[in-house]
Length: 221
Image (cartoon, rainbow, N blue to C red; front, side, top):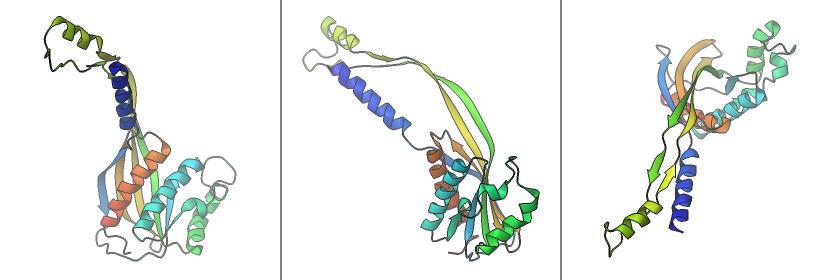
């Protein structure tokens, strides 16, 4: 009975550990020299991805965090549909719409663009050795000694076999542009450690990078 309880506890601890969200670290930032805090009417958040679900998930997560800081932000997928960017479906931005993209954004009152793109992905496989854990071997009457007590404790030993697990680290570049001048104003490089899902990555990335972006003082709320 005690062994079963310990197994359940071990499983609960394991489930809790693996359900924890991933961690995003900003490894470097850059701000255009001479840049002062500026009020932007509307900032569009643009994810560079050919997969609309991934793009929309990341954009919406960043928009939600920007709004927490009082920034008027909007997801690019709500302004620029994939059919507008790639009307012929060849997986590339149409030459004829390069200038039209900026015009379309400005027509929607956008004067700032926060662009996010994947720069790399590092996947590694690790072996986690097996571990032993023990049931309570102590008896208030027998202490830790005696054959019966030792046998009872050994019987309750729990062994978790070793296993292989993969760790994936995702690297992203985040660039902010002033659409009135078309200049790059702020940039950051980030690494997200072992995201468990697209949603987990989006939330971790958005929370950390948006906080870094706001603290840079580029945008005046």
